[in-house]
Amino acid sequence: MNRATSLKISVSGVRGVVGESLTPQLVAKFAQAFGTYLGRGEVIVGQDSRQSGTMVKKAVLSGLLSVGCKPVEVGICPIPSIQVFTKQARAMGAIAVTASHNPKEWNGLKFLNKEGLFLNYHQVDEFLDIYHQGEFSLVDVDKYKVPEYEENPTEPHAKKLLSYLDVNSIARGKFKVAVDCCNGAGAVLAPWFLERLGCQPVLLNCVPDGRFAHHPEPLPENIAELCRTVIKNKADVGFVQDADADRLAVVNEKGEPLGEEMTLVLAAKHVLSQKPGPVVINLSTSQAIDDIAAEYGVPVIRTKIGEINVVETILSLEEKPAIGGEGNGGVILPDVHPCRDSFTAMGLILEYMAASGKAVSELQNEVPRYFMIKDRIDKTQEETYRLIKEMRKKYTDKGEISLMDGMKITFSDYWVHIRPSNTEPIIRLIVEAKSRARAEEMVGFWRREIAEISKWK
Image 1 (cartoon, rainbow, N blue to C red):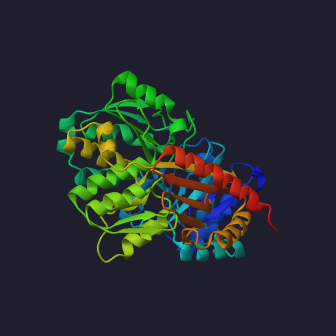
Image 2: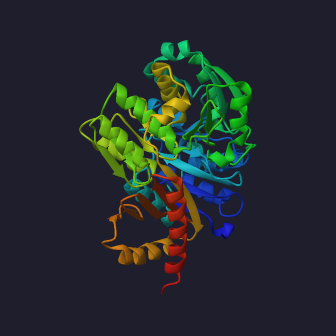
Image 3: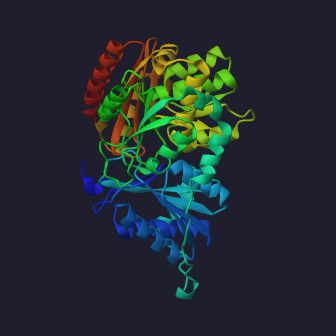
């Protein structure tokens, strides 16, 4: 991959390698365009803990001020807390300086509307049209506004969480919880939150200085230190967040990573047992969710990949969904806020442990077992679209095909999903089967198939 051309602009925001594809000048222009799109008013500005965050944030502030907006800084703050705060503060919108799970040399911008939700496709198109035209509503110097700083931006989020969860039940469990915040934004809230739930936190990488102790994506291969910490401290459970704290992965009491898909599976099992209702998930989320929903007689609605697609579907349904999310560790609980939230996920799993009186390993053995492999292949979005076009021709009538987002083909004993990433110049190749051997076999097959079809004219 040519890092100089690695700027990614999508419904998920803007991301790039700092100093190469993502520069202060570029950031300022995006902020000017967003401020022009919103109109003159208060805009919340927060960040994850990346070492480049201050530089990028300053460029954001400059852009917003130049078009007459009033920035309200919230500092290093989890993205779900920024989302809740934006709505409560009645701001016009927000910009979060974060590259989520991307490596430390990346940074980016996530754009929120006044409801504390990510922009949808229509809103993104309008905003980007302003950006590409470069027609910003610049104001005279005497109309520049003085930025404000919010001292406690996580408070509205924390209050919502504590009012929803059965805090007394969790506290009676006296759980020892190992938590790895990856030195990211989650570190400003996670220790306090776990203490308020009556847990004994064992802190790992909980200094929000952006010096990531491991790759910030909470995958099993990145969290060996947390697994060792759980065993060493005889913890009841281990949690690991990504850099902006919207995703969560779980480690059981034996020090075994469950895989990020299992976060939503466990949360959904618990929520549906208490309050059955529709479930909204994306196209790549585990079949285990469908099986659990069937136990409780509730429908599953699948969407395109991307948090906003799940959220918009949640908000559009007549019957309020009980839970939603994405299989990347992103749990969405509408009763708290319609956003991916690692703190909600922590709370639900601890509540499940308390209500059941069972260890995490026992809970994971009670849900349907599938094996998912997520692979990636370097290709541009354009190359991926051409590939999918050819694959569609070849695989017509060979399986149940969905073209909602890339191409997903469901066969009798496994499914495969091939799509361009929203955040990186890669193909995402996902296979799920009922056995690990079958999943590994099919990943190998589809890698060869992609390589072969890519040679076609």
